[in-house]
Length: 292
Image (cartoon, rainbow, N blue to C red; front, side, top):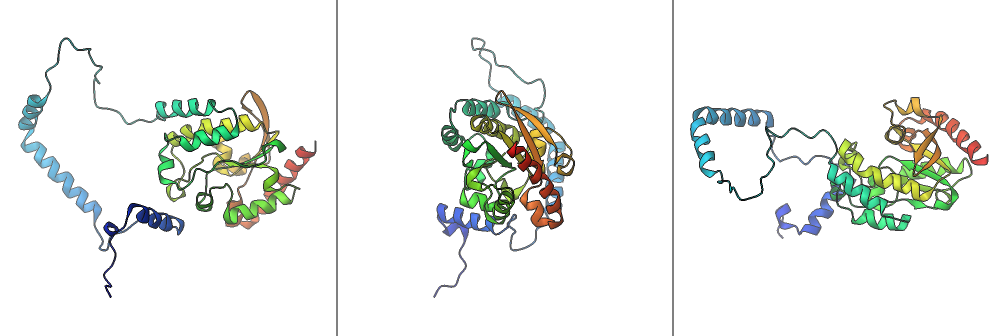
């Protein structure tokens, strides 16, 4: 019997992908090597080596670059050239955001939007996620509940608010006479970020057209925004969820003004059960608006 360990090189692509998803679902965020490596020292050594080489051969590098530079063709159309080194991009990728907006605006129903979102490849988050998590439930009820981004359970099941968070949300909704089948559940971001990290500003702006189009197509009468990320996203505020919760605000989406109430996410209650009293106050406010 051969007891030698299996190397990743021995695995097929599908087997390796399944193994990585297993690690991610188990909470693994970093893959370490068998022996410790001092990356700081290695980087410092590499940096010093490059600096020494640059000092020794400045003229040779310049001459080589000059010999390799193509000779411009006067008859060719002139190209725009940068006057200096490229600066780090501090704003979302305009092309990706424009493509997302074009794709989202082209959908005329939630089904069309789901199909378009599943075919969209302009956001890096999609390439690291197992599922594209779209809205589920009944949009005709006029109640829409929005969370931040898929959890590991959501990513595995392909449905928003799965696992323990979903079970707690079911109890929260039942307390005010609702169920997940009687509302529309969704997330701001449709793909789970690696390690459950917060999406980057560029990733958020690429996802924005899709969630705004979801709301516009669903035409909800009331919005329940769950979690710090969701509240800040829609209310455009840097205040924490504790300063934003429990207050009705009107959101302008799709040419309509929709009353929205922010509250804590079920995960906040699993982490700190004492927050349940605050959420109960918010749910009572939401129930009162439902009955009006």
